Image 1: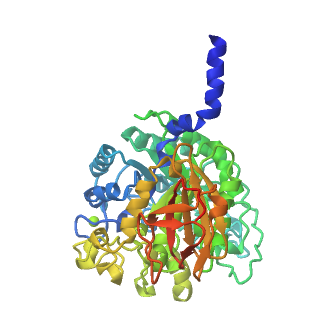
Image 2: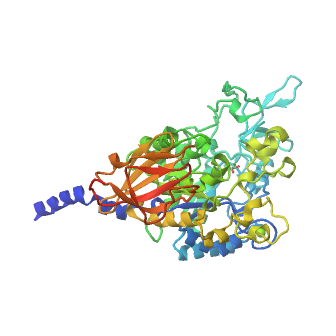
Image 3: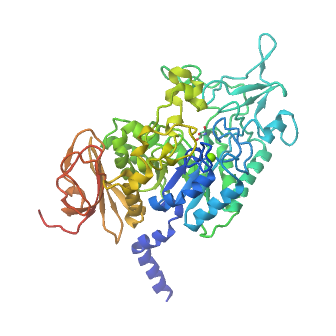
Length: 582
Ligand code: NOJ
Ligand code: MG
């Protein structure tokens, strides 16, 4: 009996692995994560700034496009110097976004529809108007050492001067003199964003309590902001070495090598602590709360975080420097391959095309590339994160210097602001052809709506007779429900200057060929070396983008030995079980 059972288990471990594996996938492995920048998603009260009630009114959009998890950038009370990333109270909602009750409603309504909610957790710094900082300035306990304070050094004329050459991520000084306390404080970002002191256990405990507060309420996960900057060396007499990067001025962050202020080993302990705090809470589905960290580093460095208790370190390879205008099929395959080949065994890949800090993908590749890019993102193996607007192929808006809001852009002045300003990628989501694209009833939203809103908007794309980015997105999201796309292997097929293609396969499911032309010229290729003898396929999704023949259609059968694709065209093809020579 015993032997029989072990034999059965042994056989099953060989043949049933696909089946048992399937049940093991967690929601964050099977869902698309959709990033919402709350200021720009939907305004419900006519003040020109998006808010929680606005998001609630659009929950059906998530259902329609098939995303099962949303991540909200900060909505907490904030003086908005960095548009919410300068938090003055971690456990409330800024009046501009609504109330805590609005957030509870959003959570309930999302959960009713089986949509998970991920919130932004900003551990590195607070606002300079946070009560902790105000008390710290006054030297009041227990807040006295909540921030990174230093006397600096004595300058030639007896005044106090900053202790070292460190630079802010946004450019310029990291040390700000505080008259009242007669000391400098450290800020990795704006001077209105003083860094918390993670060498103080009380800070760690307070931030764990923030996690507990939201976990208790039922949020499903956190996106950890600016993890790299969490710790600095204690010895502030240490200057960082010059990077020697050509053409980088002294003011710019990239002027130095950040060996004393970035990615310090102490971060591990902090992540482990947050993981433990999250694990204090049970979920209905038994899956621990999810943690994804923001981390612009090499795969080796980001993947180390997997061992500390974070579920995903964002993979920004496609974002930064990412898919540039000239990146063709081979170049994109190489970028994708970094994730697959560097990932430790049993870890889960993820891909991102854009976010609220970086240029939109349509800015880099042109509006016509939106479908090809979404086809790539949604058919790769791993969790995709979509930045709001990508589903309709939203484009960036030119914002003149005079109207620029982003402090990072403003820091660089009129000459260079366009290199840094994040305003162009943060403009309102275009809902329909009404005034201000239906985003707001205000005359002027906080950032301008793109001129193309009459055609590029959710409503028009929903009903359009011609295939729209939104329709394709929805179709691809549905396709992802298929096991082959959720967890099947990915094997590269034809790869050349134009084409990046791959086969998705899973035991018991049909195989699919995804092929996309990322090049600048037409490409006709033979895929039969990769299709296990199959010669015929059936198109189940295409990007449209057909300027001339071939005019692909769904359900069309195509011989696999000569598929012609124009630039920005892509196909998802189901491989048919026909092996006869054509
Ligand atoms: C990273 C965030 O994504 C960015 O928007 C913000 O400005 C900085 N961290 C500072 O919090
Ligand atoms: Mg509003």
